[in-house]
Length: 124
Length: 215
Image (cartoon, rainbow over all chains, first blue to last red; front, top):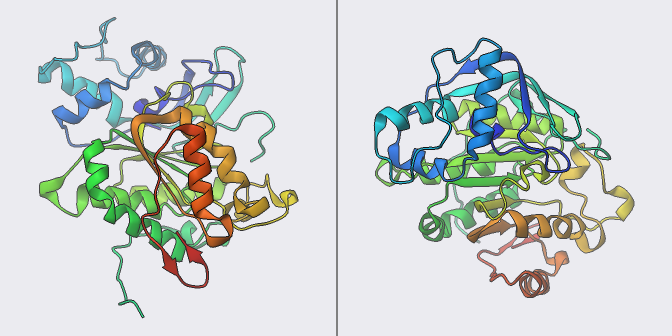
């Protein structure tokens, strides 16, 4: 589950953002594409990314990452700003851990990269 | 007799041949054909997020990624792919396929991708669904094993109909959704009803006659 995907996940009643507890994390390599990162940023909920980064930093990851409190402006073309965005969204993958819904406190496991978002009444 | 067609197929991992995972067959290939035929429309949408429901072996999303990125380097269009399945073995099989073929797709164990709402409200440009379309008793619905890949309830459209309101919420304004149907699903009527209800436009892109009539 890349941080981009975490940014899109909600709990059973829409609870967002899900809190992250990391057991294992993997760094991926993915080609930087400015135009693509800008399109991705238009889909990103900034408070979700702030929450994810905060959770990971509190567990000792992303030591050198400092996220501004506001997202880049839509017409930002600065690689110094966009490259770190690419790295965060596309290259940080939680392989094992837990996601917790802030509303219902339901815990959703992440196992081998797959978040198990099975809601009550759905069996798996 | 139509000419034999050879497909660029992704590499599969060991779990893709599990009996718990839907094996690619005629319905998978017709969807792959339809995506290729409709590729100009897909490119026009310039998708940022493509979502597959019930990815099974992962062949469909892998094929779309190949069409948009790997087939022609000059025509590379980058996209984020998401896949959902309720079958945990299929989820692993799909993930194996995506990893082996460098498809930038994250897998989510989820029913219909419900966990992506409300975040992805009107945000997904392409939806792919090779649904369970076989007419069955309703008692065969609700499983999470291989039967979830084919059991479609009354007229074979129970599961598809359950997904449509979610599709409505998740699909971007000019988004595209690709579904496979068989003759027993009464495709023309199904399309007309869905389009009237949700104010969509719909058409049959591809038809095939084989063991099943596929649309």
